[in-house]
Image 1 (tube, one colour):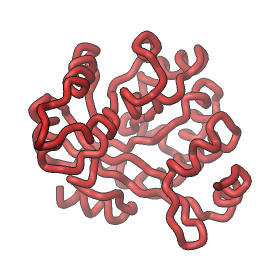
Image 2 (cartoon, helix red, strand yellow):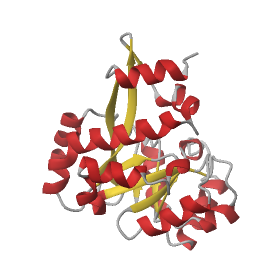
Image 3 (cartoon, helix red, strand yellow):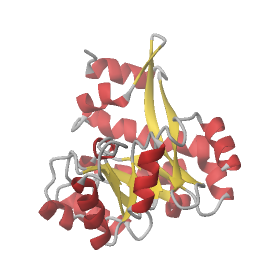
Image 4 (spheres, helix red, strand yellow):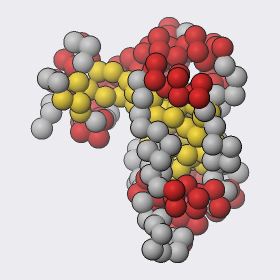
Length: 246
């Protein structure tokens, strides 16, 4: 079991790094951006965020790591984002840090504020912003897009979700996994897609791994997707090359 102190040391000792998961336009099969994914190189072993990010939720370290991600995305992708139109980079943002000022400062300091129209701030449904955060999200939508991450798998109910202004939902991999060649399209998947469309939200399907899943989400009218069916997570240079070829 990792500890908060170990994670803090990892940040201080440059053990954290980013991969980029390509986002694909389902209709055209073209790459339209990526999601920045944090990884931890701990004694030569790569640790996924699922193993350490939950430990720092609602701590000061959560904000520090988020601000670090802004800096790293700017270093990796700043020039590339400036040179390319019609693309985006998604950055996961803990709901508890919205409205506290640090996020805007990090965007200004890193230079990403100048590229705000190419950013998607992804807020996990496992947490929910307070009123100060909701007000900040509403204000931020004039500059960036807001996505609800892990949609359908979190604790937030529909009433809460209706309070949070967003542009995109990311349909959780759990639901995509229910799509197989042996079954009809699961009703829950149809229902979640229908809900998003009724709310006039764009949809990104997460964790698409098979051709069957890719065909079903296209049939349902899902606009974008991520997953190993299209690409594994890539380091910055590999992602830029992937985008060039797609």
